[in-house]
Image 1 (cartoon, rainbow, N blue to C red):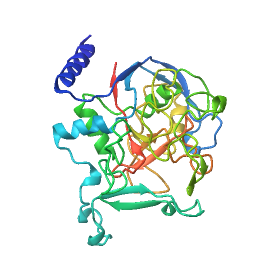
Image 2: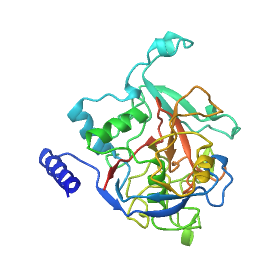
Image 3: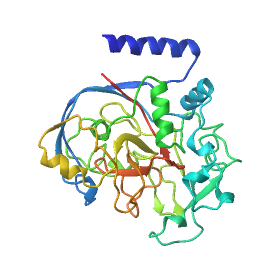
Length: 322
């Protein structure tokens, strides 16, 4: 009752202030088999048993409208809007230390998929307010997910809203929407009934997007069907931060422990492909995922991101204890 009272009070305050706040969905507790069914991602295996307590989760990723209200109330500056500290990057030329973020830019011709620099550019002035750079805006994207969000930005928003980031286990459990051992958040077919049901890449990645789903970039958060729990965009559209540190061997640890109750992730981060860089788990994939390059829209797959960076396909949603 106390938690419900706090939730009610916050909703009343937000309404009185005219703030856009995330609508929350109560996710029932239960047990499930966590991990990637029908894939070979080593960091998403082995499949292991997890027990989750009931919790609340944002119905959608946090939108530009919702994040705008947060910034208006707090004057918060995101990581992308702050000039990097030279002391943190001693090997980088001072003239390259400018505020900005990574922006997807489709190459004009086919490129090797072995080098992501073929389609990513660090753009000075790119931020949540200017997703493609200083000349772009979110004026017509109020209901699109906010992007260029670093981990600290996501955690700050959720704390301000009286919430927190979901754990990785909570995210996957909610993404499955009550389905068991399925490849996707909606079942085992990528295009059920011949229809796209998530904002992912169609065409030849990364140079040709056929836009069969009608979107070249982010889409409004209610553009595609909700899953079985009534939650939107748990796959595709934008990568979403979770609270867990990333380690590729973490699932092996969990599988050896038997049934695990509400796992909170490892105590520290380690990525052998990028040692020394602290990373948190990201989930859901994005509008850039395809069967040619990134199939991380599979409901049990995992992503990862350096905590001090975001990009034009990186957002988040919030959770709350029930």
